[in-house]
Length: 82
Image (cartoon, rainbow, N blue to C red; front, side):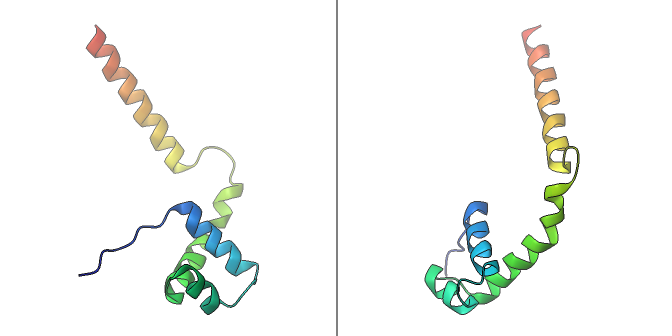
């Protein structure tokens, strides 16, 4: 059974930007990074669908959730010290 690879967000971004710059055909880029062209297509589709989030004002949902988690941890630490 093959082990499933996990790619970092930075790597995926690098590959997608290379595709968007049209430096080479998707098949050539896929061969270069030993990836399947369909996977690169999925990454590109997700990248483009979420691109508008970059320009949103205010904190993202993930940032709001992280802040909520930090407050919860701080509250638990205060209870532990008391």
